[in-house]
Image 1 (cartoon, rainbow over the protein chains, first blue to last red):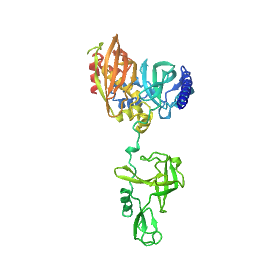
Image 2 (cartoon, each protein chain N blue to C red):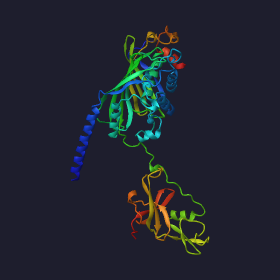
Image 3 (tube, rainbow over the protein chains, first blue to last red):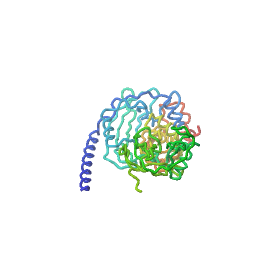
Image 4 (cartoon, chains in turn cyan, red):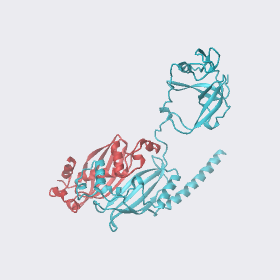
Length: 319
Length: 159
């Protein structure tokens, strides 16, 4: 029966995809930009920045009679940080539809330019662009996606054609973040160990959870501090926790994100059978299944070569 | 001076793909797509690092051609296709071959290889005669008599 369900779900997804692709195809021939105007005229500064960046020392690009490098054709039509002003609704919708399909990332794959004549200082280009084609779904190294090809006519003055520019982009669904900052490569924060609490951490390293006990009045205390809060006595010894406890309270962390942790996760305040409490983690329960009053059992978990921490597993101790 | 002839290989040009080149090229082409300057954003989109944008590649191919054929070169067509991305730390070697000479028009095929494979393949159509540039900078006509070819290109390279 699960196989039948899978089959039906697959067929439904295929149908949905086919419907999407029909919608995508409908954008072929629609304008992508209408009566676009360059944000700036062709100017010496932009040409110089381009030549400096690319290491192009061609003398034709400098001086009062400079021409712009031919390959800057598309640059004059770019929206820049403030974004494209001349994009049509059709093109915006097409890109949004591809986003809906999970194809949120984009790379350019092809540029085909024809140059009718060089552009000169002071000329301000206008441009119109059409959606030439939208491909079917393609599997690429980057992920599955669709190629969208636009053709732009670049004009000057009274509409004199100075160049055309065909541009192909791949809108794709990224496979997965490449080398994400994985928890394995980020160590958990180190405890701050001082004279007052070093005995506690020595115990943890030997897989023992030690609770301080006041020698004067017998009050147990955790975390470790120099004196008793009940009677003020600085004399103490330790007793080992049995390991039984219950979730006294908890919070679920969504934000901020710390490199060694994978949110959301539950941070629990566990009340030990001895009556003292400890902030820790319930390790075998999804973050949204941790509940107040849940019985838990202590265990020790080594997170890296140098760090072992007391954590809790749900349920009563087996032994 | 030697006129371009079919089958002539252009001397290769090695371009170091620095982070600076990628970012400077993206900004000079007014391309603020985050994958060309923000490594974290690039990784979130499945790329191990930032990578060169197509306009910069296009410009480098243009530079390679006009440096070789000289400042009078006029590009008529340039069509490129990208393959393996140009990531920081890599080197791209541009090579070219004259495929066809038709009067003043020269067709050149271009390839740019990096350590991952072919970054760019393309075809350019250009003309190299002085008159191709005659309506341009008069000052650039100093070597008109010498013609334009590899000699002229060398002059540009040394500047």
